[in-house]
Image 1 (cartoon, rainbow, N blue to C red):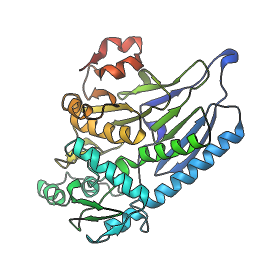
Image 2: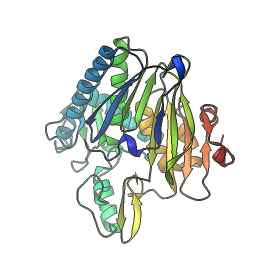
Image 3: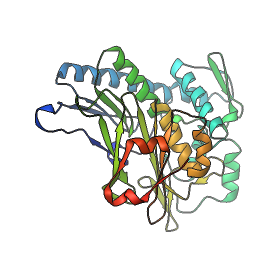
Image 4: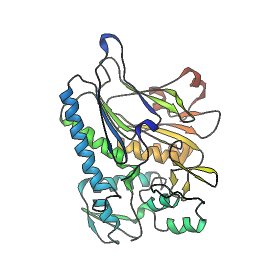
Length: 346
């Protein structure tokens, strides 16, 4: 599985420092996986626990990558893609992730779709080849004929693709899923205070220190050197961000962001970023992309079907607007210079 977003490139910055005797020791462990960087931050002085958390998460993420990567020919997902429409036996994680992917595809009415791999490549993303001209309407239409989550058929522990030319790429949801699997594994080990972060998809447990919740900064997508505000994360909550500010292609002198609208086959225009909070990282991963594609007005209908979710939207325009849902607003404290730019939508 190949991804282009790393932790340092997202809208997220940790605020886990303290002062005086109340400061909690934090131990960070990082490693490359899924084309990005994974980090486990444990807020405990016990280095053995931190090392144990690292090893559990490293083992878990490698196993998932080996099963789900489209760049590994022997992966379970590659076998499904290359089966020519025949039934393929699924491993448990592959099956669960396919079911979740189709769930969010239905919720979004196709704004999130795990079968857009070929249209993404057509625009020069997820490939080393940089295109120099915009794909023709004919090429987009032809490629879209082989996309659509409706092509995925799951029965018992097997799946098939109705169109043998359809290719599934779970990159839009797999990092969040991996965060949740790691989170559940650490829960079993009685590790109480930590953040798991895979390419900016994160979930927290406990607190950064006894008197302070885990807190992150939401970075300004138009200016990487400043943050729009701080966000407190209650224990168990997950967060993900999608944006147009790092991964893009210049074609004929115009910048095109990497997030494709599966319904049109073209890059999304009009949004700079979305940040989503929910009770699971797999949901925030899928919904951050969904809401980026749909925008704030239409996105509310998708949010109504995911009651655990709340969101922040930043349209791609100036002056900057910070559009938040009521539940997000309760946890978000804007910086003074941006407090008048916050708009709460219902």
